[in-house]
Image (tube, rainbow, N blue to C red; front, side, top):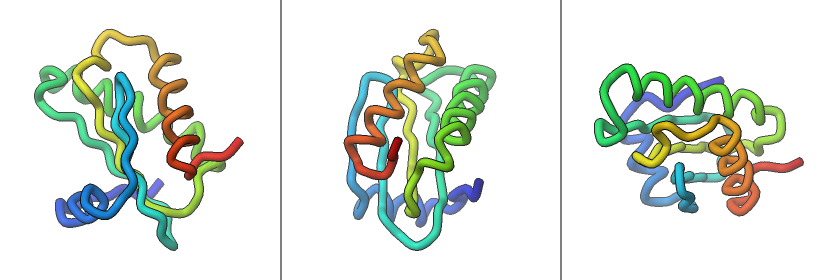
Length: 106
């Protein structure tokens, strides 16, 4: 899994990529030749322990669907409503949003 690291990479995808909102997540996708992913979990979500747990959950969800994801750059933004939610609910929402954006296939 190759991750986005620089702020300019995130900004490019925020401005040029397609976007879908859910209850727990916001997904951005920009179709390209290489597969990269970025995770954004702000301080609004909680303290460092909670943010890191959410980030680990999001990495695991992405890893689970990695073989079904098209080439391109994905940014996953966690909303504050993600705290205390079940992993399966977050996973289901990621799948639905990915299908709507057209980068995730069965």
